[in-house]
Image 1 (cartoon, helix red, strand yellow):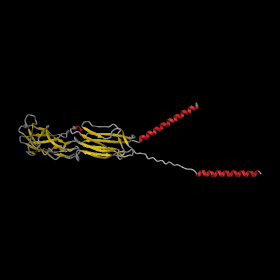
Image 2: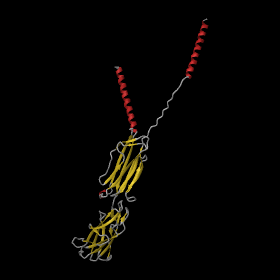
Image 3: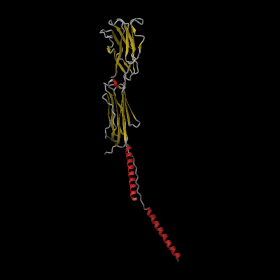
Image 4: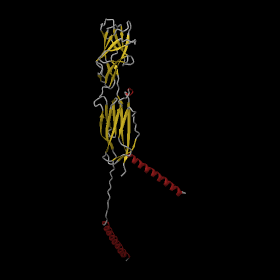
Length: 191
Length: 174
């Protein structure tokens, strides 16, 4: 009985030793490995151009001067800083106003102005484009966008002043104030 | 009489001891010795990245950036494409180099997180499972990141990341 107990203890001891030996062997193997890692990350740039001026104050320069009856004023949209609202008041046929406006590139990519839009209709670059602001079937004003299309603005920079010329046509309704909203479309000036 | 006998026996015994002692000394000088000196040098498993370079930065000095960085032990390469825009391509190449003294092989490749979605395209080429890398051998790797030229505006400012890990062991195959 005593002999059997001693044999059992010996067997147990051998098993433990074997487990430890194999374990240490495993640790040895594990240490003989190596590892390579490739990390890749990419972040897309942003295009974010906003009108730099908040108001055309007191008003745009016009054909009848500061004391004249007609006036064109403008204000940047309070929410969407890419929109600019113009108001043409007390105007008359032949009245003209020239507004100087600029934008700022707050994105991380350079931008190039491609078109000015008035009420979502394109203004032909460098030429007169007519618009029916009150949707009565007759054009009320002509608008010319000068020096704007094709100009490139780098990130963090402000665009040079651009000129928007407005001329009132005979169909402009008497006694009414008309408004329009302008925005500029930009693309990436990349090869 | 008894005393004399004792002396004779004693002397004889001493002579025998001395004779046997001298014989033993003789035996002692007639010995030899063999020596085995053993030394062992452990091998080294050391796989690293080498020759990393920007292969393609599609706009050169344009707004897009394509860079890489290596960890101090040259075992981790980090590739970063920044200010990416539609049509931009960044490709970095590097060699996997067995700088150790033991042949290696790819034991496993950790799950590869690839953010490609048809607009972002991440294309990696490197080691394959069980691929052997002999001592001194170079294996080319590359990682290309691009944004589709028709990527919608929703991708502006988007960020992606991917990781692939190669677990390597000793190649014991002959």
